[in-house]
Structure formats: C-alpha cells, structure tokens
Amino acid sequence: MFPRHRIGATLAAAALTVLVGCGSGSDAGRDGAGDPSGGPDAAPGAASAAKATSAFNSAKELARQVGSLELRITTKCMVAQGFTVHPPDPVAMPDAGGADGPEGRVSPTSEQAAQRGYGAAPDTGSGQPENSLQEPPGPWRDLPEGEKQRYALAKNGDPDQLVSYETGEGKFSSPSGGCIGETRKKLYGDMPKYLRLMWLTDNGMRHEAGRQAEQSDAFLKAVGSWSSCMEKAGYPGLKSPTDAVKKVKDYYGGKDTGKNLDAAAVETGRKKEIAQAKADAHCADTSRYDVFWRTANQKALSALYVKNEADLVAYQEILTEAQKKAQKMLES
Image (tube, rainbow, N blue to C red; front, top):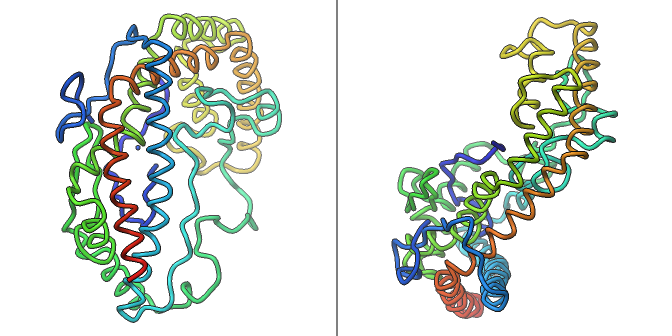
C-alpha cells in the first residue's frame, strides 16, 4: 500500500549503513536463518521486548562504530597504493518512504499542501539550483576520468566479482576484491553470513514490520476513513494515500508528465494538485492513519526483535570481533 524499496543493492561504499532474511525459532542465529516474519499477534512480554530491543540498538550502534573504523582502514589501504586524492564522503540519504512528515504518513501536511502540494509540478523554468548530487568542487572533481576509474577499481575490485545475499527483495552485495573487499573479509570473515545479519538488522525486520502494519485492522479501517473523506471532497476511487500521489500525474499529462506543457498548463495543473493535496492533508489529519500505522509498526517491530534476538546477538558478536581486529589493523 505504501511505497517500498525493491532493490538489487550493492554495499559498495566504505560505510556500513545502507538505504533496504531469514529464520525463526530455534534456527535463529544460524547461517541461512533469519526470517524476519512473525505474525501480527505475536506480542512479546515487556521484559523480553526490552531485552531484544536493547540488543537491536546495541548492534546498530556497534555497526556505526565499526563502519567508521572500516572506512579508515580502506583509506589507509588506498593511500598505500599511492592514491592521495579521495572522493568526498557520501551524503546520507533520507530513509525509505520519501515523505517529509512523520513516519508512515504519505499525505502532505497542511502546510506542505498549501505551499507546494505534493511537489510534483514539472520545472518549466531555468536557473534552478545546482543538482545537490553533483560532485562538490575540489581535487577529486578535477581528477581525469581515467584516474577516477583506476581509483574505483583499486577500491572495489572487479565489479563483476561480488559476494551477495539474496534477501527475497533482491540481491544485497559487497565487493569481493579491492581495498573494500579485502578489508571486509579480514574484519567479518564469513561475508554471506555477515551480509545476511546486516540486512536483517538494517532492513529485513523494518520491511516486515511495515508489511504487518499495513495489514492491521486499525490501520485498514483508518485508510477506509481517509478514502471516504477524499470521496466526499470530490476525489472518488482513491483506495489509499499512495493512489492520491499517483493521481497527481494526471494533472500534468499522465505518464508523459511535463512533456509539451507550457507554463500556463503547468500552473493549471499545480492549482489542481494543491487543491487535492489540501483535501488529502485534511483527510489524513481526521483519519489519523499514520498514527495507527506507527502503533502497529512498533508492535510488530518489538515482536520481530524478540523473534530474531539470537541473530541480533550473533551480529553483535561479529561486530565486536571486527572492532578488535580493526583497531589492531589501524595500529600496525
């Protein structure tokens, strides 16, 4: 119902965190186990949930610390090969969903709706701000492309030689060669197991909790209220807030959004967009579907943390050993 990542992700950056499994019961913690799914009625006791949540939080913090050490080791490896100019650190991207509001809310807020609708209006002007993803000025941007390619090969190894874990949503991969691949093998050992546990912790349980939240009775009832509210406002046939986002394209030419539209046509579409967005924001506020989603999502996450606690502990153990190894590698 809500947008969700479908990826073939590659863990090619030196950082450990990613943008998006699987075992249950006594199998948790074994390689090949780690199924994040658990029934929506699997409500853990308070003590068990607190213990498992603590294991999750500890694993995430430890991963952050080890990721920083891994980056330093990778840079040290590159310097040893004669590379003195390095690309700037990647900019952290926002988490899944794309909404600027609270988690679980696809609809714009009232303020967003009044100012820009859904932000879907195509650009017909010039002199727009420089693309934020463009490389910033500096020594790296000035390097010849050939040198950048040589750097990438030394850092990542052969792009066709990857170690991967099949997540059920796509492959989650990491370089098997280059400075990154060699560093990770030394730090984490069993890379397929490490990738599985990392995926489960960073994405698998979160994705499964979202799916369970979308199936909860309270959330579905609230979305039904939202749909009825939108119909009364003059927007029938919208089954979910995601449908409202998709409908906006119709105001700008549908699948060919923005093509062959002059400024007047875009302005007409923008007025329709803002009108719908205001209705959407009002219906979201009255139905409170995002509040029900967050409640169900947190309940599901708590159950999943308990269900996968053995895997979370196994991940911590790998990271703890990796931290010790990394510190020794940096001292040598």
